[in-house]
Length: 253
Image 1 (tube, one colour):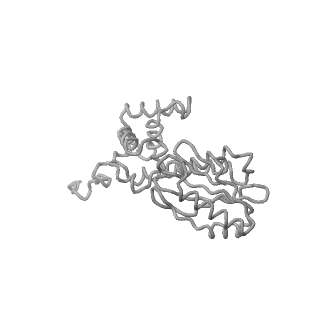
Image 2 (cartoon, rainbow, N blue to C red; image 1 turned 135 degrees about the vertical axis):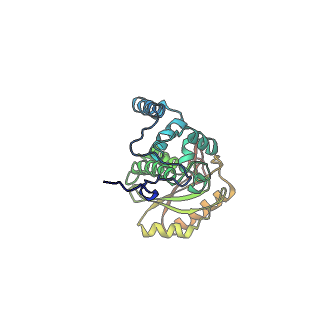
Image 3 (spheres, helix red, strand yellow; image 1 turned 90 degrees about the horizontal axis):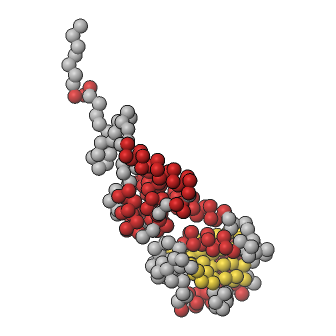
């Protein structure tokens, strides 16, 4: 029986990634040095936790899932060089992450998943909790959510009559040194939620939580709006990179 000649159409075509690089076939294996390196990092993490690893190695662990068959150490270092530390990498805007060579949609998605998980865990420790007894957890949540943002964000935490945190809402986003705030809208939202008190929170991307004149004036305007509606302004927190400032503690309220 004569066998028909093999044509080009009969040949399996290599599967190409967007950059033209061939993906390995299902039967291929990672180079042994990559397998060993990844296993060492995972083992060290499981034995010593995050404290046993510098930021770039923790970032490598995250990148393993997004890039399963390539050495991710150069990309981890490139991200660290661009943004400064682990926290700033995972909270960086997706558009800026894509500017780094080697970052595709899988990497962006993995980093944003880690960011969302960190924020959700921190938020769960304070929502529906008494603010005074969970004050340290509240500060941790604010730092996790806002300390590493590159632009200003304004949030309002709403409390009920027992000082239980019943809502946490982002009111506005701004630029690197300004965010628009509308005191009447803040107070109106408190009434909609049947809240009795509120805490203002915003970040300073510069890292210095010292209040500006505009910060002080805006706080006084919100306080006046609250007074008119029998609401209490519990505090205004400014979140810096490594510390925060409380208006109540500093005597501004």
